[in-house]
Image 1 (cartoon, helix red, strand yellow):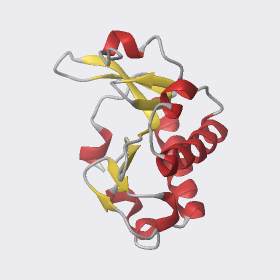
Image 2 (cartoon, one colour):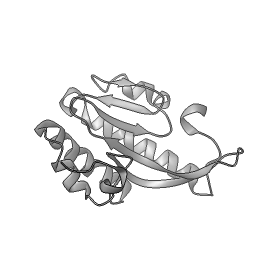
Image 3 (tube, one colour):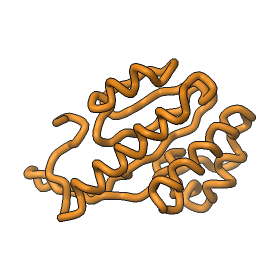
Image 4 (tube, helix red, strand yellow):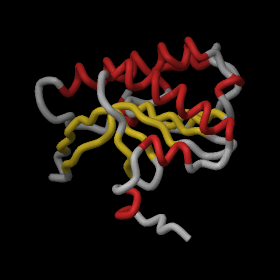
Length: 151
């Protein structure tokens, strides 16, 4: 049986990870998201955090002294629920989300069962706006606040 630890995942390519998902619909939806996010970001995907596929990063540094790098856009594919990360929060996209189709949200997570349940062009618009928003806020240095909690 394959080792699914974080260190083992660093050795697997995004393409191989998606192929290993064992669900044709999740694989197909992941390939669509992979293409969309790569076109939006102009960046190659990276596999992080046990299954998250990330595109581009930004640096944050809080008053508490905590700092690090976070993904700008990305997703985590699972059978029956794909998580799309909107690091600037789902609340700022309420009007677009109202027309997206079948989904649920939390602070910065958008949950979709399958892409056929939603309007893909609206998702693309949301992801593109999120990417541009975060990149504009991080262009002059580290972001100093948790974006999804402040907007």
